[in-house]
Length: 87
Image (cartoon, rainbow, N blue to C red; front, side, top):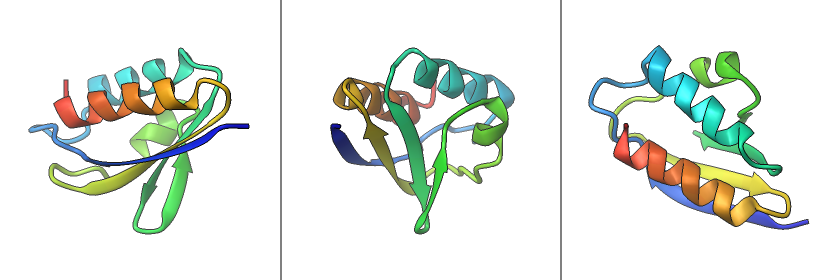
C-alpha cells in the first residue's frame, strides 16, 4: 500500500464553510485511497461531510494530508490544491 504525506496550509479566506466542506468530502470520494488531515498531532479521516465539518480549519493553519492506497499521491495532491486555493 502506498502512503503519502504532504504538508500544506489552509488558505480559504472565509474559513471552512459548508460549501467548501462539501467540496472537500466530494473530492476525497473521487479516489480509492483513504485520506486524512492531521491537525496538531490528531489525524481526522475524511469520510463524510460531517467528518470534514468537525475539523477546526482556520486560514493560515498548517496541516498534513495523508493518503493511503494505490492512488494516494494523486488524491493527496488534489486535496492539497483545494485546501491551498480555498475555492
